[in-house]
Length: 315
Ligand SMILES: [Zn+2]
Ligand SMILES: [Zn+2]
Ligand SMILES: [Zn+2]
Image (tube, rainbow, N blue to C red):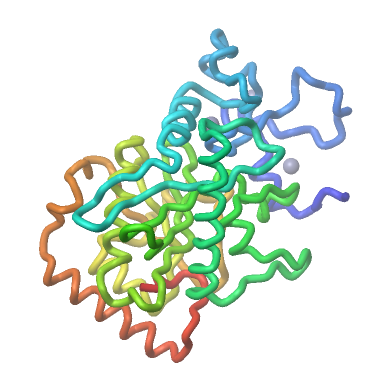
């Protein structure tokens, strides 16, 4: 396995605290200087550079996860505690965070039954995504991107390393109606490359319900903003109906240093999340919601395809 020589990798392999670049020529046994990868924000860091280096033992947990600082450890633990927990949104509807637990992964808080149930919901979420999006295959490796995102598969190639992705699902009774893939990069931001709704539930405001649930959970975790890729045709819908806006120049710089999933032909949009603690039932303007749904669907009908490329909201 050769390391990719591309320059893009290097923006992501320097210490987040001292900015010192990883010495690619250094022998691997230079443990002191070696960069660790944070299990929550995925950023690289020298353990000695962490501002909380004095209680380093509490920064890493027993399950073999490493964290660059306390806030990442706390965020990780809160997310683990939310795993598979049902959050009621309104009568009939609930939101849930799920993640595939791999054989080789550190123990999660879920017991065996919980993990089996979680993994079966993940399989349903993948079939839902397949219903919504055209397959995206990495040219060089043949990897199915959507599948690997849904299954939070790791890779030595940074652009294909999808560890840390969670799936947020909207459920009606026992049925999964909508699903979204979300990766949280520390408390700074979360990315959501895919959100989709089952065919039979489209144009009924499901995307809005799930998004409300996602925003509520992320803001309770003190995540500052949500970032999505959007195709040109849907930028207007996301901005006028869902409260997203294009990234400022300074945001673009920030995003550049983070390993995010980006697609050609899409632009990034963001939405601030803090102070969004209100329960989703109190969302203003239900008539506006119905309108947003129609408009979004009409835009997608014009694309003249039953499946969409990444960057569209399949609702
Ligand atoms: Zn490098
Ligand atoms: Zn450092
Ligand atoms: Zn971190």
